[in-house]
Length: 166
Image (cartoon, rainbow, N blue to C red):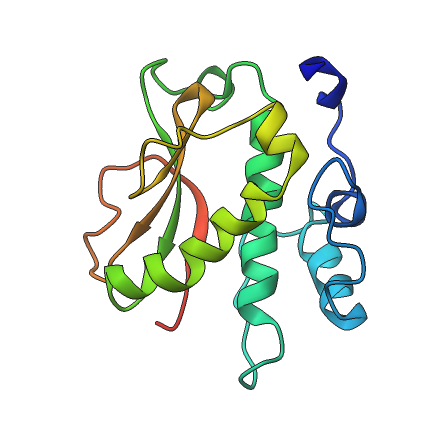
């Protein structure tokens, strides 16, 4: 039953990662990475710059955050109206890297893999699997990899995203 996956209120970041209904990734994130993910998605931040050594979880935190924010946006019946956009407008999450190929072949594929494993996204908020260059969801919401040029996301209604290795 599709509606059994719908919550009127977003589940917590920790529940989203751990629950079988959402990412089913319990014990996947190191505790320190999970704590930072929870803090970043507490509602106290609208922007973050993650820095540090290779392998400490910066990209992982960014990817899980993007997917969690996509989930929260999916709970809105009319997101365009909520944000004062024309009903035909796209709402976009961008994944930007030095090149379009890097954006697609690194971060975008990891985002898609998380979404593909999620019962929530499969059952309630599926993307159009016919498209391979982006993830196109209901309500004209999409996740799109873009190049690192200054104009790559120009003119798009960017709701959130990842700028990686810039």
